[in-house]
Image (cartoon, rainbow, N blue to C red; front, top):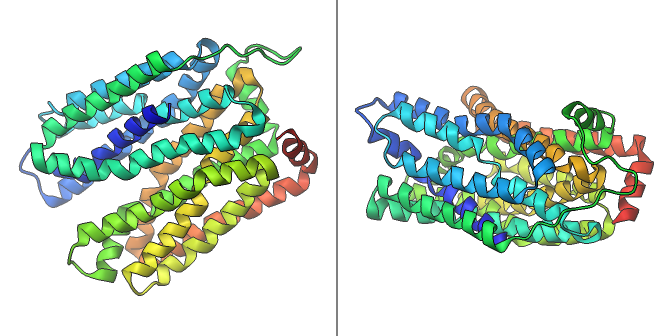
Length: 395
């Protein structure tokens, strides 16, 4: 599954460096047209994923997750392959929407591995698995850029689709999913209404899921304007290179620490580590708006990656504890859906704040959001100490 996630994450991120450039080749368009449709084409994938993630989660709970993953990888492969044959912006837009229907591969893989893993080591295992998608995400844009320059955009889409199909083959022949027995007396299936009521009646679980959204908002708020900010700090010389370094610094910190945070949370407790990571992320985000050179920003991005790196596996491991086996897939599906909603809101918010108030304001607002999340989660634990204690003891 590590290698499947590596190929999936790498393949999806390969198109990021040249998506807007590919749109330029589809007609004689103005700069504003290209910028507008680049944003729409990028974001529509998350809209489709937001809608479909809970549905895939529910199907996975009922019929098993292995074959859902195979369908997802094949769907992604077909979508990307057809993008190489697109002749208009509208076709590319519709294919990106179609791609979004199948975009929940990595969260679904985490759900599968989570349910197949003993609770006492879930954090370490999920943290280790997370390094696969992080490594792919780090290498994907670089490989995609090199391929696009070497063989052209259309051919690159076709090669990317092959990597996605390889992921489907890896899961189909390399993964055995064992049927899990529900705890004695527990229900074997739940309606969507029962799942939603379980989330709403579990304050800590609800806050953890909402935190997922704000983490994505924070992470993506700076994405659309980071290159512009780097240009302001460093100037136009080698702008693409230094923007890439700033982007990758967070991923490197993420890669180095995600397994360690997962392992530590197994011993200390998932909620305690989650609160710590949120406070750390808020602290490291804030000074990014006041740096005076590119290397200060790179160091802060690395430290941000260190803190954010543990949040995904720790959060997933907690949900593994807080939701009955028969509804875990659907709960994780809602969690994924909320995350994708954050992916949509983040770039819009960051661009708007930067446009009206400048780059520094984006860092201040984002840091404040993370701080409020940490305080909200801490306050919820104070009101439900028994839930936190039972979760820590069961790890």
